[in-house]
Length: 91
Image 1: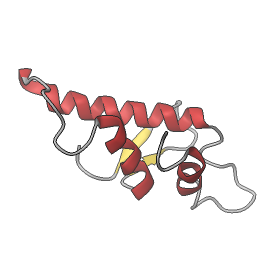
Image 2: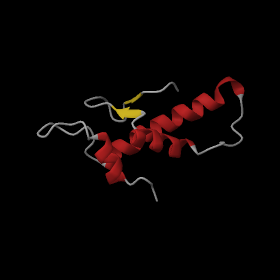
Image 3: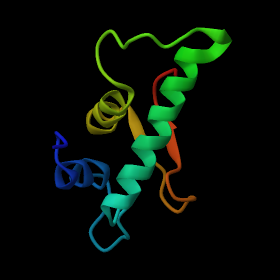
Image 4: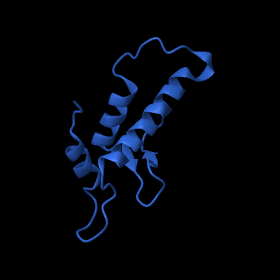
């Protein structure tokens, strides 16, 4: 089970949207696409330079991506292609 839940993630992503505006995220699909894209970035960073990915010290890439989205370190861009993200920290 995903923690935080999809509904919690949708609330966090849409918290800055004014009433009457189109929400940034309307479905679970957008959250899945954005977190999957970020998880691939994390994996690519860890495997860059021919290093093998033996294990993850703290958490798995998808868990880290979900946590980044929930804490506001990762932002889904509105009106962009599906899964477009902006990472507020350095990758």
